[in-house]
Image 1 (cartoon, helix red, strand yellow):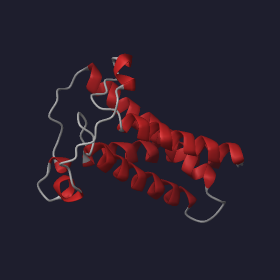
Image 2: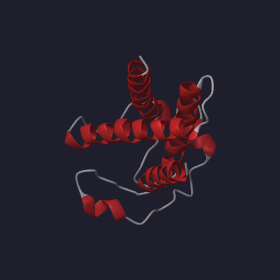
Image 3: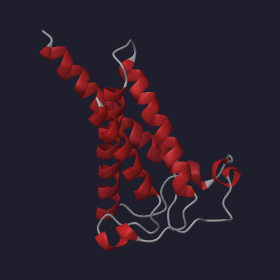
Image 4: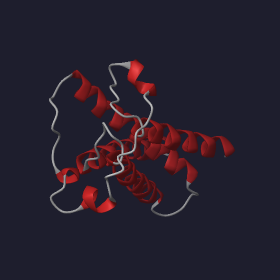
Length: 149
């Protein structure tokens, strides 16, 4: 049980660390350790007000970097969804509760990312993260259902 908690905390910290890294490029490991720089002009209102960049689509192109970033979102948040599930006690709506925890963290993570120079936060990424978790939780549900027969 303790290992599951440790893995959950490590995954939360890892995702937060990457979100806190400015000008991160999946295709360039030398950028993975960039020192973080807060955007001191950013406010919660400037990030989340209606019509802000948070609700727009991406401004960069559809290239290998983009594809790898989205694969990372799907897989890391898919794994995080499973870790939330495994850390919840056996109860009704456990899958839904795990997904809601994941979606809340994904939203907070994107808002956090919007405060970092060289990064941006997007509601689209919250949806991608939540979709990745939904897929993984659905697969877990199907596997558990078929193995219980």
